[in-house]
Image (tube, rainbow, N blue to C red; front, side, top):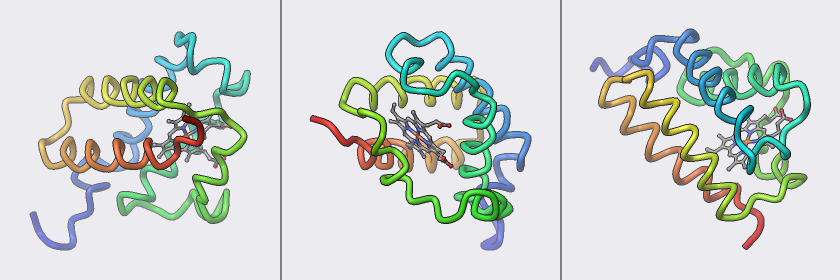
Length: 125
Ligand code: HEM
């Protein structure tokens, strides 16, 4: 992998992140633990998460332009995220990721990031 290759590019660019988030939210829609935490209209949630992840992995900075600094811990304070919610979120995201059969480097980087970030966003025991 050339040093300038971003994980965003390696994963396949914006279509990959859109597909990942679409599959993740298809899971949220049917999930009794997570669905109540999310707004009725999941459209903006889909867009924001796809843009955030694409930006995080080296893609366009559209998330920052539309939403400002991510400040994810602050943005998650309104939602009660305990171990059950964290684990549920991770399960659905891991399933969505696996369904896209990403390259091993993408799968590995995502796994490390997701597990650390999800725990960092837990705000309840
Ligand atoms: C790797 C871990 C996570 C990342 C990277 C992440 C990322 C994000 C992002 C980027 C947003 C949109 C923020 C905005 O612009 O308004 C968001 C919203 C949200 N997240 Fe997370 N999140 C993570 C974990 C979790 C977990 C564990 C939960 C547990 C239930 C959760 C629940 C929510 C909810 C309820 C929203 C609000 C949805 C909305 O208003 O659109 N997130 N998250």
